[in-house]
Length: 589
Ligand SMILES: O=C([O-])CC(=O)C(=O)O
Ligand SMILES: [Mg+2]
Image 1 (cartoon, rainbow, N blue to C red):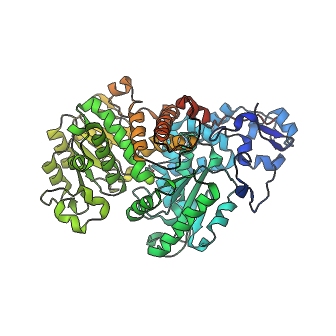
Image 2: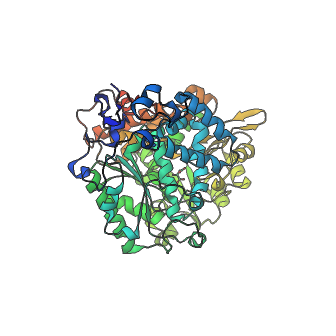
Image 3: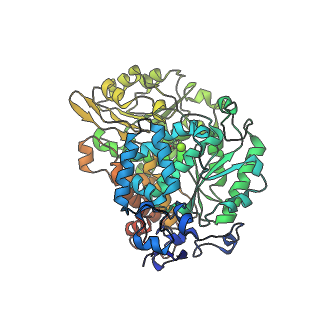
């Protein structure tokens, strides 16, 4: 039975009671899963019909309302006579989108669609993922955040500023959906590699959550984007008349910690123990501290530390097929010793340790980090931030990346510094001089911040590099051969990872789940992909890939006794698939 609207009255159906999926009309009201506390909200549920129905993006189908639906829901005359199918609407929209030459216009058009017809937005995104991901996600979302104030139309997500201190629980209750399963939250201090964008960082939680739905199948009504506004230190924004956030310098210390703590407590109180909170694009100091502080009391995941680590480890495991050896045979040099750099480094060290039984303190020694002051070495230990200290190995000081490359002779070079164009010709040529197949990952986002371009990597290594980047690059032709760069972006991991946590009712995160996700992703690279030099599977199959990642993450959670959904479904891949939201229109009769 399908769920639907009958004479403007919402009817829940029997087949939409799964914890995650369905995405049916009844989810909006979610009585099945809402707790008593959640039912007490300050607004009244109103039933959509007629004009209101057309204006409600959750239910609107535009020209795709059938004749009978038009009769049943008071739509006669409100639509032109023609009836379209969803596929025709999709064709028309893709045609229109392709007319826009300015990428930001495509972004605005996609956001307008999301606000107008949610199912059509997701249908477009799912069916055209390779084309539209760069629009709603990196790189264009970066520009959208920079200009968020001037392109602002309707608020998407919750804005929680210092003004809401003491009232965060009430603010959460203002949100129209009650059965929230995942929150992506930022404080806007380190948006991609673009720095402090304050309140305008909201584009990131919105974009990440649209991928939770499109790539991971979590229903849209279960996703809540949040921006915590404690001010910004970005002078340009503070002086921008269109800036949408608090016009003050960032609150820090106790004031910051108290607001964040109130938020974390209110979220758990309002949505329960199993709500997944994904931290996104916080500055280093806060990112590490928040993760350490809340990992034992909440289900928290830091995408920049953990999601990026998991996707890069997957790429490295896959790359072994092309370069040979085991992970333990390789040596790694990072430019950037922040969230992504140390997060990836630690996960590699953990994986090697698991595979070899060598203690992690030892396996870390094959991994070197360079920060803005040069190679991280033991003589710098006292002055280093705590998250860099495990990487301060014995070595004489080295200032420049190029000299560090020559001294360490890594087989793998990874850029996570957020600073573009730092893998210079010298650096890349040095990598190629002592590696048959140098592995080079330029991970900083968006494209403007990439350490080098795909073209540079292939040219400077004479086509020998195994290259991946955080933001997408087009295939490159070099010496008559086409090279397809991989996109080592956490988008491969977090949607499936989150689905796995949600569908198993996981209450706490564990690093072994990240390793499981990496192995699951690497296992999706086919012989055909390898033959083309690919170390990530194409994004076109991402929903299948996400289901497999979800299944492995859930399996690990059950194994660790962290999953609360019992009994454990027998076939976790099938279960994951059955939970996934479908953007196909519902029949409202
Ligand atoms: O958003 C992305 O594309 C990847 C990411 O988490 C970041 O760069 O902070
Ligand atoms: Mg991020």
